Length: 281
Image (cartoon, rainbow, N blue to C red; front, side, top):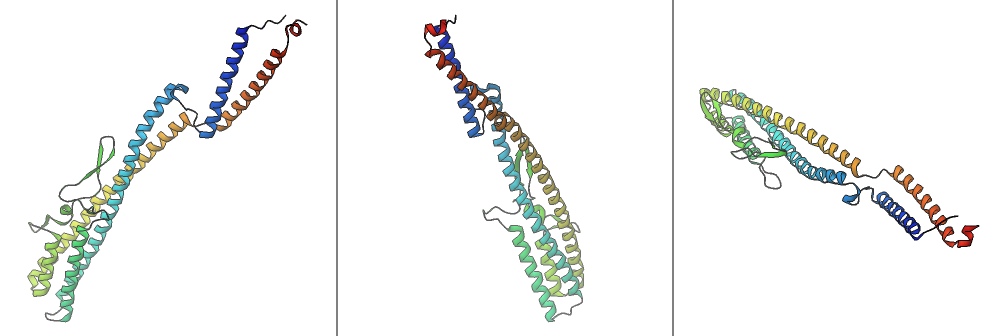
């Protein structure tokens, strides 16, 4: 004898409803690619995903800052290379001016080219980008946040690049050094040319030193960029493992539950259609 009570029917209905909800969740997981749709799906995973999301936002900002710093550092390095080239050319012109007689057209040409070098160097030192941000910081280096409690220099100051150069005990700027070179060529004074040449050589050494410092800044930024990218990738992989749907596994489970539900519904329908006499036979 088979006994079917109202409780049995209610329990079966609830079981099938729960299975239907599970199938619906699986369908959403497949369509969205996310296996968690609410905190109740997995409280611990949901909390961890939220924390990872906060970290990802921070690392996205730091990634942008590092990229901006690298861009500034690259431009500063490029300008320093051009300044090096200009100072090297100024040295060549000054040496050439020693063998050029006074009053000759050649000397005037040397003076004109040295003047052009002086102007170009000033432009390189005071150049700004399309946003109006100087290539080199003014007076104080601006440090860029690139991590939790970590700030880094992207460029040096304009003053450190072009001023405070010790030329025989006298603090001079690159502009002063070039001005002296122009005067020395114009006057043809041998002593002045010797002093000016020494100044240009000292200025060139100073520029080379600044190039080395800028190279260190660029290397540090590059290393930080790799570090930030690695951590950001690790966070993404961890988050993906927590919330992304395993399509093959989820679809397989969903199909099994569909088959089970269909079989249960069919059996439930047959049983409910049977009369008491059918069950007693």
